[in-house]
Image 1 (tube, protein in one colour):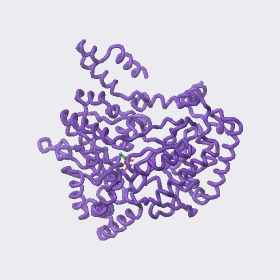
Image 2 (image 1 turned 30 degrees about the vertical axis):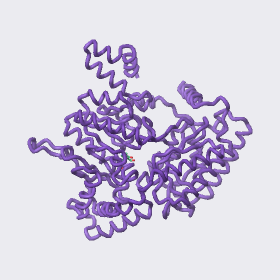
Image 3 (image 1 turned 90 degrees about the horizontal axis):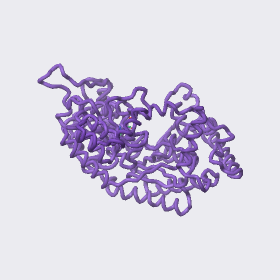
Amino acid sequence: MRMALGESLLLYGLGAGAAAAFGLPALKSRLELSRAKHRSLAGHARLARRVAALVPGYAYGEDRFFSVDGAPTEVERRRRDGFARLSSLYRTRYARTLAVTESAKEALSDLQFTAAYRVPFQFSAHVRQHLPVGAFLAESAGPILEDLDGNRFYDLAGSYGVNVFGHDFYKSCMAEGAARAARLGPVLGAYHPAVEYNVRRLRQVSGLDEVSFHMSGTEAVMQAVRLARYHTRRSHLVRFCGAYHGWWEDVQPGVGNPLPSRTTYTLKDMDEDSLRVLARRRDIACVLVNPVQALYPNSAAPADGSLVDSGRRASFDRAKYAAWLARLREICSERGIALILDEIFVGFRLAPGGAQQYFGVRADMVTYGKTVAGGFPVGVVCGRREFMRRFDEARPADICFARGTFNSHPYVMASMQVFLERLGAMSHWYDGLDERWNARAARLNRTLEDAGLPVRVANLSSIWTVLYTRASRYNWLFQYYLRANGLALSWIGTGRLIFSFDYTDDDFAAVAERFVAAARDMERDGWWWSSPDATNRSIRRQILREMIRQRL
Ligand SMILES: Cc1ncc(COP(=O)(O)O)c(C=O)c1O
């Protein structure tokens, strides 16, 4: 904390120009780096870890849970009734799914984590006790999911982004892939012939020279960064504030990682100060870009676990983001920095040629994952030859090692082949894609506005997020009303809705109807009551006071 404060004082008291005038290049470079960090905690990885360690755990009991915002007794009573109704509906309607979830949760660490972080921690214990969410499903068909009790939901979770063309498409890719791979079976080391096809097609899709296969997106990113370091002989990677690139240490330098990374710079997204750092520093091997950040630059992926107020912001400007990528491209080329476009999420969702095509930019390396193996787990790196080579003929002992037992698994490769073969036949989905999803978002927003409901949506094509227009401490509860109305969200709640392309207008109309019904239910139950002087700022201050009181 002292370091950051010192940096700020120097920055504002002395300034980079003055440092240069005094002939202090190291200081100037340090100041430039400080200036290129986003002012939020997300922009200061080390400071964020220290602050996170200070946040005390505490939970609202029954007495505060319903009126932490000072709601009058009548509103509190509506909330209590609404919560009891919701709780009883969850317990009866989802009984079997919940029983299996509870049984697995005991020893399934992942499930314990997602259950705890579905809502802000102050509310979490009470919610877990009274509104447990089932984590098991039995079936999918089109955009519909069915749980173990036979309840049907529209799928707004999108399998973390894997589901671009609809579940039925992936079922078919996986089945045909399995049939093609069956003769070779589980043999690893040597390749299934599908690999040769996949390499050829991925070169066409990416416009890049070479390809490597990995078992997850995280590993693909690891390998791309490692190659950039190997070839540039430089230590640092640049990522932009808030961007997710998997859970490997160096791409998660702050909260969430027990060891802070010392070879990562987290810089402001879409900001000239960051370009200045790229143009001057000599230790930068690569810049990692996750294009989904275009929807919420400098913010972490929105999740209801951190939805403590109504401060979530999002909007997308394609031309502006394309211009930013063009500037990055220019500077990376000038400075010999590898530009890595991490398309693991947005890849085939924006255009058949991915984000490179959509934003009109050419990267040195591109990572793909999620959807590209037709439903099986995978990570892919495509890159220019000079970055992809893992050895150096002139220095035979100097290699860049990367392996993985299951990379190029026959079933995965065969299913990827089916996916890539069928991609051409999917081109009709891309015609008018953005217009379709933008129109749907606009229509839903108009309905919400006309109904006087304090909810809106923002979108980057088929990737949506929910915004709240009235200062409230209870927005996180909306995900539970959506579920009760037959809409399935991922555990991060309303932060991200991911639609598959097979949603017909009728499907979407049904989703919109349920969405509005859920918002009406939430309004009826009093959760969006707000005192006239409540603001997002006053809410955050209240929480800060609670934390300080708790620590003292
Ligand atoms: C942009 C991006 N990069 C990397 C990853 C990590 O991929 P995986 O979960 O397959 O390890 C993800 C996953 O969500 C992602 O969205």
